[in-house]
Image 1 (spheres, rainbow, N blue to C red):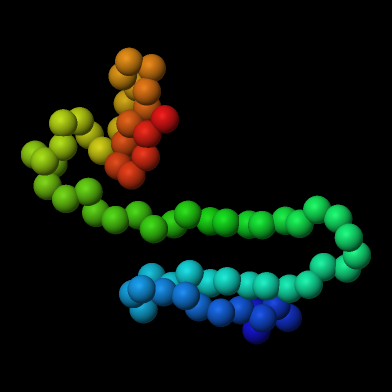
Image 2: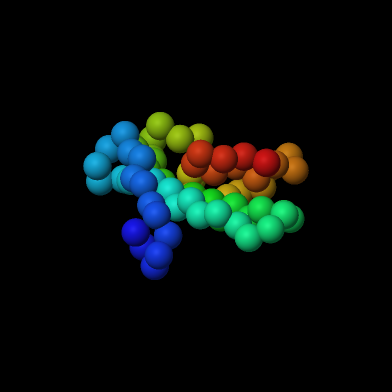
Length: 70
């Protein structure tokens, strides 16, 4: 329990758990889901990248960086 909400821990690695809290709502209506993304991993050797993986540089209308692109 955390602040009265039952929680469960789901993890592939003990040092990086996902904490899942579930509770019932009163009455009908929309539901709210909060999802945080905090799993950042080392980028590895700089020479393996064609650009700085943490820059978020925009090239040809696309923003690219480690683990994401738009």
